Length: 151
Image 1 (cartoon, helix red, strand yellow):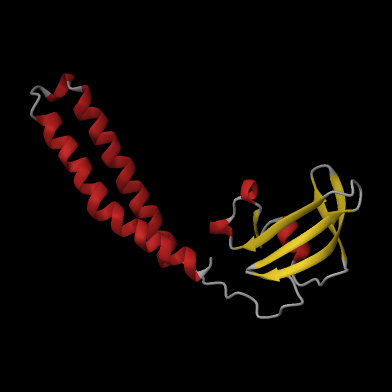
Image 2 (cartoon, one colour):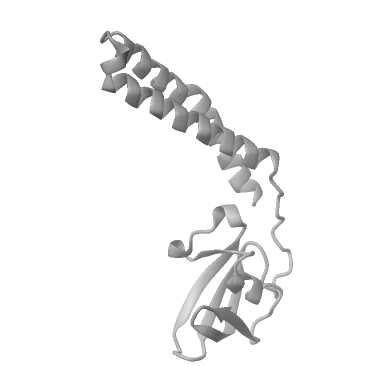
């Protein structure tokens, strides 16, 4: 993951451990005040929420603990982490722009693809003008790299 993503995770962890944890504790305290816990749906919901919160906290802690920081490539002429790549689909002629990111930051709907994805791997290390072949569920697709920008 990028250093930026690691910082976002650290900030989210602090928020969850302080603000959100206090909110859930307040929900549980309020639900307890309603009386009999055996038939108290508010209490059950609050405890479920607390379980989800603790699970999310553990997940983020694990991500932070095992994070490998991917340095952005300084090579301007080659596709690497942090590259914004314009490609032309040689079959359809359509053009698309993708940013190569670490797997934790990938969001294909926003054009952010992981360096671990088949498409990301297919582009990685190539230069403007090169044609790359990417294996997809629909078969092998060919793309021409038209532009590389560093973000």
